[in-house]
Image (cartoon, rainbow, N blue to C red; front, side, top):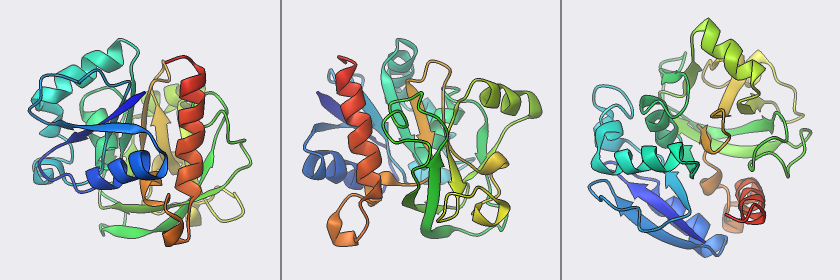
Amino acid sequence: MTFGVVVFPGSNCDEDAVYAFQDILGEKVVKLWHKDSSLKNVDFIILPGGFSYGDYLRSGAIARFSPIMSKVIDFANAGGFVMGICNGFQILCEANLLPGTLIRNHNHNFICKNVFIKPQHNLTIFTENTGVKDVFKIPIAHAEGCYFANDKTLQDIIDNKQIIFKYCDETGDINKRSNPNGSLKNIAGICNLKRNVFGMMPHPERACDPTLNNTDGKLILERAISMFKNMGK
């Protein structure tokens, strides 16, 4: 199995993703440059965090039109698995692979801290093996992480159980105080209808190394990889 990490000008979490998947989780990883026209036969694509193209216009707005993204879109539409983290989540929304958008944090500040998130169901590879009572401490680092959608879109993702993670407190209680950026319904991560495209603002790849005294991100990623492999992908 091979994971492809897409690298855009301005990506700054690509090495974090490579380190987490390759050195910590022991998977084969290749980098996919934004101008590449080939996905190099990868099985799973990661769009990492950072400031692709300097976040000019809107976060992810320019990256969505980079050459590699046409291949990523085709890959996802054909059922291939894609995960976007932070800026990667923003890019997936800009590419219409995920519904809604990410707007400025309600406090208009860049937020960098540990938060707690809670899976909402067991219907995806990222939540099937976690249990809905699990609470994970995962870092965030963003200025435009507030999830927003119009009323119909929001109701659709609720009805279709596309919300995969919500911000919560340390005890798992989902409340306004535990929402770091003002996201609707405390949304921290969503998936598409087919459950093969995933986006989340928190950085699980930054919570994998025991040296950092937090491996909650490793738990999320290794469980997802295990589920993915069990699907015969």
